[in-house]
Amino acid sequence: MPDEATDSQKPGRIKWVILSSVLLIVLGGGGGAALYFTGYFSSSAEAARANGESAPSPNRVNEVLPLDPLVVNLADEGSIHYARVGVSLGVYNPHPGKTLLDENLVVPKLKDELLTVLGKRTSSELVSPEVRELLRGEIQALVNDILRDSEAEVQEVYFTEFIVQ
Image (cartoon, rainbow, N blue to C red):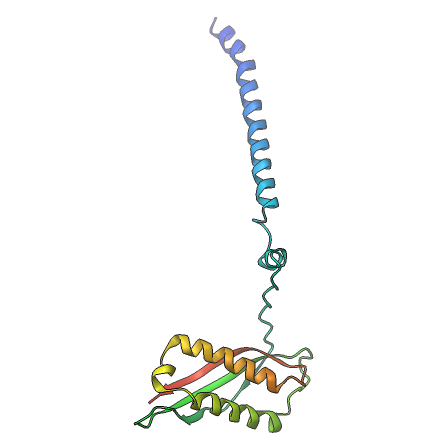
């Protein structure tokens, strides 16, 4: 008799297992489709393109141009302060191995611009992390303006030394 009860319950149990498996597959597929069509799995570049924004450019630095540290008098009134700042430029060169920058011509211009930009700041401004980030963007824009005739482009600005006194 116990064998008959077990045999009669098997078809009902198998139906539930099959039904629950099908239900899981349908719900999982539907959820996956919903995530796909809402853009959950799209990359940030695709999402930016879909929103009408320009995609963020990837960091393509393939050369680093180190500059000698600069010492500059700061724009503090009533006291004398100075900063010693080391800067290296992360440059994208579309032709790796080929020299695009004549360092004898470009580096003096870069140093002059950097001294001008840094000399307009006060010591209290330069110790602020927010101002340093703004300074990175300002330096990057200035250097790319100087390099506009070249194929090289500055992607990153690295502070290798930053002393304010």
